[in-house]
Image 1 (tube, rainbow, N blue to C red):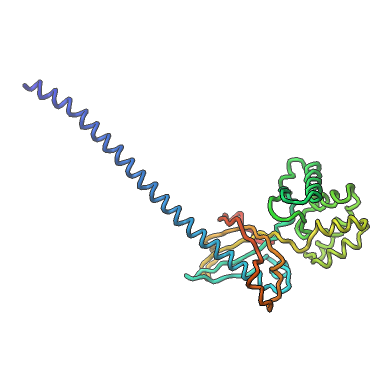
Image 2 (cartoon, one colour; image 1 turned 135 degrees about the horizontal axis):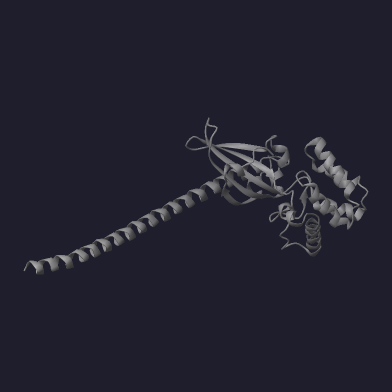
Length: 280
């Protein structure tokens, strides 16, 4: 009899262990599903909050641009690139900064006319010929073909003028641009036109230079930094691209200003401290 009971207990023990194991697995699966559900819900909430915040920041920037009067964006920024700050509900402030984003050569040429595609390809070819693998650090994917003379590296200016002339006859204009930039800090549109007109380029090449060089860029890098009022420590940093149309320089008294879209903003993303610029 005792032997039979011992056998029953020996049979019951593995069964109990198996049931415990099954229950543990089921509990783990249930907890995992619950955790996944919570993470999904949190991601959805974060996505909603981020989308709401990015739309609000876009609207604020658009409103600021509409009331620049006839200033260029560069003229409206302070020495560190600050544009304006915005107080929001809850006691936070958002500081907006803009950076000229058009100083590099355009690498994405789809949608351009045949002549501009040819010029764009020649600019890229010259950059690759001079810089090899480093050429990827001198190109961008957004914005128009024209290059900003206020932020373009010498290599990009040389590639642009070389694509226009086919030789190094544009090097004198490159030197003049860099010299003026060093002396004045910022080349305005009138100064750029004077530099091009006073160069030794032919009239045909001058016309192309005026089309491919700009002192009033359309492409800007937008940075927004949120912090509590009175605090030095930001709670979040964001950045986006902005392509500004000519509507951004409408006179303040223009009754149609509020009806015109002055800026297209896209690509909002959170950034870390080392990706946020300190100075222009």
